[in-house]
Length: 378
Image (cartoon, rainbow, N blue to C red; front, top):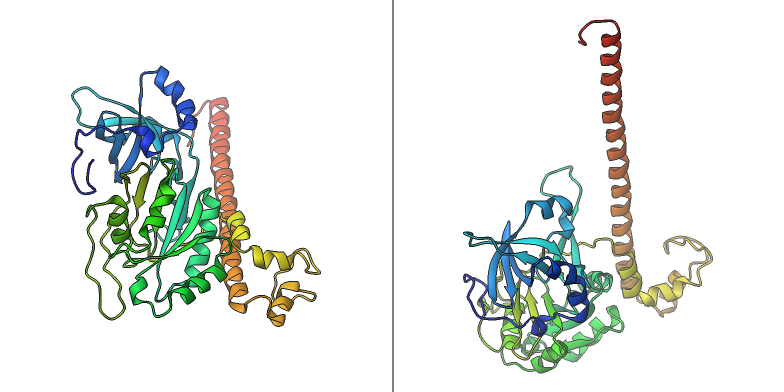
């Protein structure tokens, strides 16, 4: 197996054990008929990455034709199944195709250039379970809400893992507070260093499923990953005595096979987690709020100052926590703002295209008049 920071090795890979299924076999058949090899992206480093293939781990890069045919969110990401073609006299193979994704965990990443549109960042593709890793002593409930919403939108299932159990004065209370903001989501409280509770986490890989760890820096993702992998593969940072937080150590997303079958994707710590096109995910994450919303007087009730708002009444009656409604409204406004911005950007692009088309038409008419008059166009 190739380690995260090492060059590819020639150890063989059994694709079935890292998530290859009948679905991907069927989707790959047209590529197989053309002589391509299947593989799974285990890491991307800029223009190239590492792909796990039956004969071993190879470095590969997307072909120019593939990049020209895909938008940014569809380019090869960690977890993707791809069609690979070897090149003679080249150390790097070519990725010529990306198979359809069963799921994709995406967040919105703001563009680095001011004024440009926000873009989608694919954190992991074809995942089954996404572990939201947070600190048991101080779980960030508002962040957990938004991560649960985006995971439901992705097509994967969320599971919350609270780490540093030994530093929490009341682990059960921490789990209860998370359960209140993540209805129906399994919650585990673990000690990554001692391994307490980790066995239950590893059980989610049964059936060669793909697991992903997400969370802020220093919450213990790499320590947990090493427990699941059965060896110290990922670097871990020293823990601060003041709050038990570790230092951010993972610098790139990478997929690693699990000892008993399945795969694990570890991700760098994310300072923020902005939603991307997650309307359905928000609805599923806030089923408690939307259950009350069905009784509002107005179908388009914004749950703020409208008369007959059943959601506000539920808060007043103590049937719904005010913080829960506030969290819902924050995410709803975020999605609404992004949708409005996208509409404006689409309208701007349409107007720019119209202006370009108008300039072409005017230039064509000008050339036609000049030709008719026997002179050169100015």
